[in-house]
Image (cartoon, rainbow, N blue to C red; front, side, top):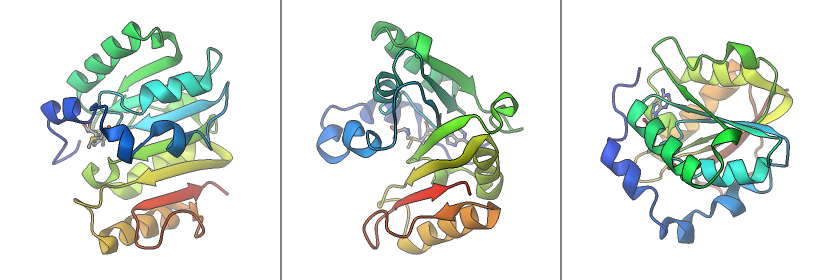
Amino acid sequence: MAEHVCPFWVGYLLLSPFRRLLENPDKILGQFVREEMIVLEPGCGMGYFTLPLARMVGPQGRVIAVEVQQKMLSALGRRAEKAGLLDRIDLRQATDGGFGLDDLSDKVDFAAALHMVHEVPDQSSFFTEVLNVLKPGGKLLVIEPKGHVSQDRFAQTVATAEKTGFRSDSLYGKAGGRRALLSKP
Ligand SMILES: C[S@@+](CC[C@H](N)C(=O)[O-])C[C@H]1O[C@@H](n2cnc3c(N)ncnc32)[C@H](O)[C@@H]1O
């Protein structure tokens, strides 16, 4: 599916506790996620954000964690089991045909694509698929890494999302940053 994906071993680095100093999952995601929600997290890696999301949605909620690399998903599965959160997380492997989310049309409350969109070869198809599963009014948070994604490239990504039908919240995020909050009209 992807031409360049984050190497498996980088998945371990992304779990570093020091990352919380720069990217605290509760601060970033807590404002969007409530108990009982269905949350989609494409490109979840080993689950730096997935386990906090699973805590936020509570026992009646669900996190749909989609990964192109089976090894990342397996590591996430082990971590979720150890944390007692596996029953709230639906682990799915992405394929060349997409994320396999046909059962979720208009059902997802919130989606978070965190440090992954720059690895997706066909961003238009990606945004179309996410748009399809969100409820009307549902939001997609996109965060990209400054080190890999220039400001221009990020602006192109947001423009691609808008072309597929997303609306971009211009008040969200710092000017020149790599964060966008998109919503399904
Ligand atoms: C840089 S890692 C970020 C992982 C996690 N979101 C985080 O912030 O810790 C990007 C992840 O996206 C996954 N990925 C890349 N392209 C993908 C695609 N088309 N579908 C699903 N996952 C993808 C990679 O395998 C990798 O685990």
